[in-house]
Amino acid sequence: INDPLVSEDILERGDADMVVLGRPLLADPEWSNKARDGRLEDITPCISCTKCLNRIMSIKPLACLVNPRLGREREMTLVPAAEPKRVLVVGGGPAGLEAARVAALRGHEVTLCERDSKLGGEFNLAAVAPTKQELCKVIKYQIIQAEKAKVDIRLGCEVTEQMIDEMKPDAVIVATGCGPVTPDIPGVEADHVVFAQDVLASKVGVPNGHSLIIGGGGIGLETADLLANTGDNPLVGRFGVTVVEMLQDVGMEFAAEVRTLLMGRLRDKGAQILTSTRVVEILPDAVRLVNTVQELQPDWTMVTRDGEEETTIRGVDRVILAAGLRSV
Image (cartoon, rainbow, N blue to C red; front, side):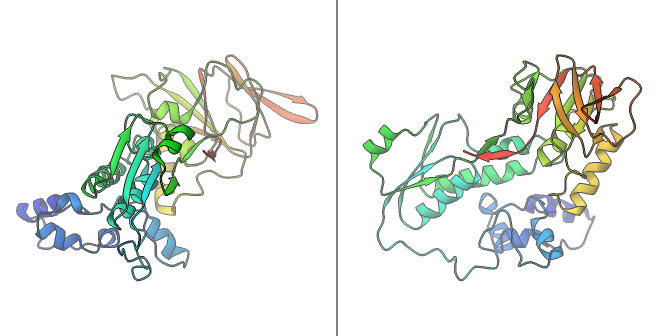
């Protein structure tokens, strides 16, 4: 329960006599005061990301994904800048929006340029996966706060060297995020090979067949969670999903609570997960693997090549790359 309207509805229905807040007060210590004053759009939203729980369980200082000042309020108090400057922020994702907001609140003249047609960056894609829609609240909040701070926001604006020469900012903040890594695998340039980000952004159609995802990190597993379907939705077909990961386990960057729920959903949806497995070649309708330790499916074949046991998975309609990220 992290929304004043939800809290009030619970009380009005008589379902509870009191609503007690936990994590929402870490995201915004002024939650109750803002709710009382009707300033709902100014409440920094808790998105239940479990970062705070992760830190506690790891015996580390408390931290919050949406409130960087948590536990460091004294050293991160916003004070007016001694000398207001012209600041250019490149990139309109969460980092760029926060940098622009803080700089503007300190008295700087801030321009934020985003080459896409909307703000939010990778958070827009992260919110597509099942159970993660609350991430949208952060972007909505950040946009409202940046606008209130009088940040000059320019969409569809790609920053160039010429533009910087003409604008002559005193400072440039680079918040251009990251992009997907293309693994060095024969056949990776084939037309049926796409990035997980393109699937999440609906830039490519979803095949009514078998998708193989290379990479068992957060992006790969959440894409599998999106695509794997048990067939109970009449609007879509049944999708088979296989996740291939080189390491001995998958999703280890998740908090234990989140990972348990995610792995349970993937199991219930029939997603196949292969660990300690390496993709050696992508074929038009198949994928060759080595070091597979799981039991073979009936339609898979295994041969020994160069001293390694090699498995071929046939009937692969689409290969989805989720092999990591690199800084842009």
